[in-house]
Length: 369
Image (cartoon, rainbow, N blue to C red; front, top):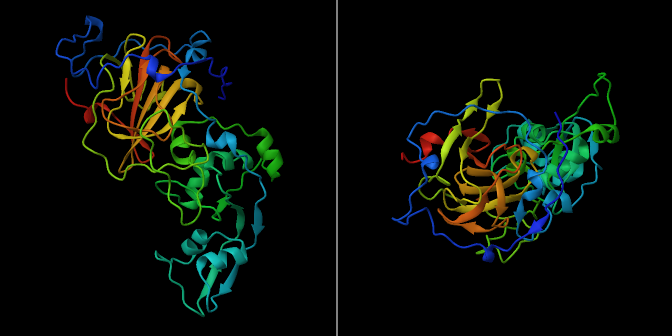
């Protein structure tokens, strides 16, 4: 069910105004209050799924930042439909030049002809050119913006194009756009489809479709050292190649909801940790901030960090966001303050660990207490 977006950020607050409290509660004098203490396997409290009173989303405070990439670079739905055909390789041809000549994606041609990397073709070779609707990717376009322009879920575009980590599109790449029938089963125009389409963003959309496209031989930008330097929303950012060590708890508190399906059939892709308001939220491992904002209404103030080796962590319901997209962070670094934004009816942290596109249970991957 689509949910209307809440009001935009109301307050801006610099991170320098927030007292720094160290990395991971290493102060030996620190003692968690009784309601925060937790044994290794606490019993979840009674779950509440009623929508809380509106207004929590308006309390999310964050550093000044530019809009997200999918909001700053609109995509024109000017795809080209081509018929399936064949092509005989000529001297000097490459998959990229054949793609430009025929209008089909070079990756789609390689898949249709079982051509593995490094995609070597031979003069005289007869290639199958797969038909379909292809979108030519321009500089700065994102997967999310492309999905919205064509009225197709981004996950479907990932599937038909067999896109892989790190999901950074390339300028000049041709993406196959899957067909979608109207509710009455009849074919519909792109304009009709886009007009009725509503993309409810989720974490997977942001992680896989939030990076802007980059030139064919260019490299993503290196992460910034602090929140003082803000990268342009049209600048793709390099993620770490490897996960450095394991994960730590993002804060102390009672686990009030576990990973997996709930009693009513709904699924939780992470865990919920009850905590007092304005508790420091700490990065669970070294990484690079992939997203900061509140574009997923259910999760409110949200930070997403990529750690390398396909690992990602997610921190939701924050009341204050203290980092910027593209910022490098260390394990134990404060990235937010806890809150009750989004669909939270108490102060808590929504915490996820994802491997690739799949959420995994965080508890077995966190140290015992």
